[in-house]
Image 1 (tube, one colour):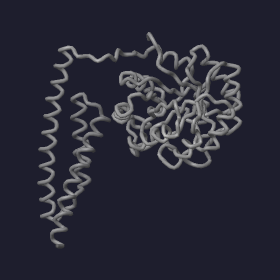
Image 2 (cartoon, rainbow, N blue to C red):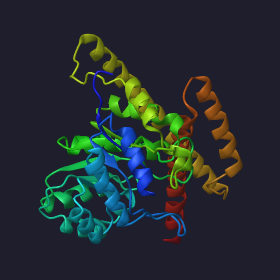
Image 3 (cartoon, rainbow, N blue to C red):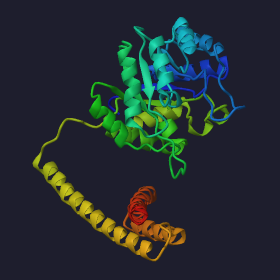
Image 4 (cartoon, rainbow, N blue to C red):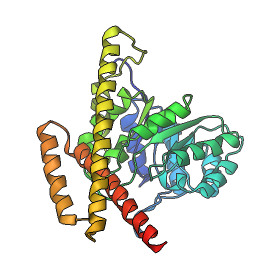
Length: 350
């Protein structure tokens, strides 16, 4: 690898002083741009480890003084901001759960007014681009001068392959809306397991992300939080060495233009086929109304999904993509049929 991306590395949680310092020392030669460690941990359920609290700030200060690395941690309340700034923490980030709540973001933004410390804003847990942009704008309006965005994926009920669905189009759209924004990918939270971290990191580099946040632990198997997605410093070095940093200059050669034209033709065909399919769905909706049938026929749908995914996989389409695609098509079909039934019912009531 000729160059490495902007890099943030360190454990999910600051557990003990020894764990923090040993992990930081293992990363010293790599020299990440920031050493990360969560000291206030918003957990999904009570009773889980919720961070070392203010004691962790002292450990991060030792990373600065003894190891020589800049440090970063997550803040969720104005009092977190006050304590972190007083301790001289170099960078702060706002977590996905906090980003979801505009009231919390506004309080944090006001507590950061005029502060000359870089702030990273993770995407909200739900796939809402406007909510992500809104959180960043709240920081901007409070004169936070250095802001970057972290893509850590989006929560889904049915987890097929990722811990959090990457939904790459949303960070791409964010970059389109805010081209000056530094965009960082968090493969650890997207993947949830070490086996696919490289794949996610490479995808981020291919999509012109400027940096990576990768959870790194001195002994991942013993981590108190998110053990399955953390790697050692040695594994991190190996991952970075394998990364390919692409040339992102705009390419306008005739061959590329030809490929894009072919894609456009294929896309037009897909749109037309979907249009025809939805016309058939509307016909089915009318039939179900006439014969007083329920919109959702669960057994038939499950069998249809299974067969379609199998056929798609034979055509070398991934199971995840195929499942998502056919579920979306089915949802739109149900919406069309429900609309037909409800409109007819309303007409009869009139």
